[in-house]
Image (cartoon, rainbow, N blue to C red):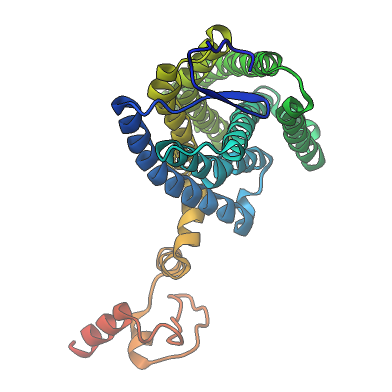
Length: 360
């Protein structure tokens, strides 16, 4: 390992990593147990929320935009965190509590954690750059941001980070790998912060313009408001990522420069790791909170029947007379839409409606 490990420490050598054995102190045990419970809840939330978002994107044509392609790429990294990284973390802590040293679990966890962390930062940077082009160069957006170009960029980012993650198996020292990762992630921080500085400045200008136009009874452009709202959504995602990842990156930097200690590795770093895991659950929640189309698409995935009933009740008035007469077809009329009884006549809602009609 690149960081300094004193001879007094009980260590094991696992491929590219020298690992300090679990100290089996009371604080380390309590930390391991609590963080495992938190990770168990977190992986269920992360996997379920990101799966719903991905399914909503696949099944809803309106969501298949270029901006949402970057969101899907970010959601895939979050799904990997919940489905692979967190189970490996729980397995690592459980083995440590039982006094078992499994290098395979350690190496798999460290590799996947590094990959998913870096991929999230890179995807977030791509999102911010896409928003910058959409807001500041809307006339050239369709020419610059095309589907083949977006897919090529996403594929290139994933391939580059997979290569960087696996290069440590070639014998390159961990210090060099970590310094490269810090340089890439630091660049992502700087680029994203720089881009959002100008995006927020433009959003405030749009807001002042909208307020001025409303005072003069002039309608504002819906597209400008939509782009500004989406930019704010990306800013919430960046803020959540910044809050969740900063403690872990700071501790990892300390470990790289000054070396590992049992207290740092098993008492403090697990909490920072779980804060990183939390970000994988926050991102899809932010999508649904800030975007009405995504929220509706997710609800359609959760309950297609309920979504269909709500869509019909909102989209067209219900002619109760047709229900009472027991019509089975649903032709469109000027006054309403007939409701088909096939597949819905046994539902509690239809029975309540019919009993109410019969009592009139």
